[in-house]
Image 1: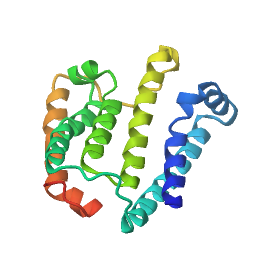
Image 2: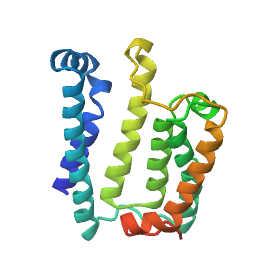
Image 3: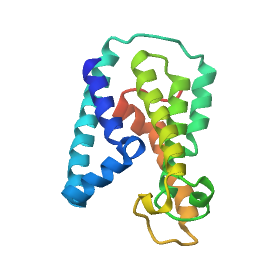
Image 4: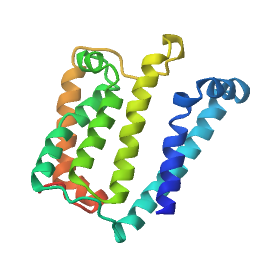
Length: 193
């Protein structure tokens, strides 16, 4: 569990710098340059993600069960996950979905985390998905408080009338691939009840 927690702290920690210390982050960018900051950010993120993946796998070998979700919650989790991939696509495809959701990536993260908390009850799952849920809520609050000048939007495709359709069709197709094949292949567990 130590490897997993180290990865979670590193990954969510570096992703929280702009939430808890925007002045420090801006000072680092000014001092080191944007490229050096992005390089350091990427290295810490990658190290955290690697530790998360390895630690999660290790923790799953000897799970600590906190609760056992009923089958109905697994069905509900599949439903809650339905908009996640379209929202992820919409984060990079400006259109009505992106405008309505305001921050579709953070909304997708919150839905993803909540769905997985509904379907999983081990300690490592609660720490992982609970951590991401808390982070996404904190980041959304932080984004609301930051001025437009301090906003760091993700690069996106040019705005266009087809972007919403691409987000929906591409997102739902990706959802289907994950539900019926990729989740089992990547995680080792089928989300289908």
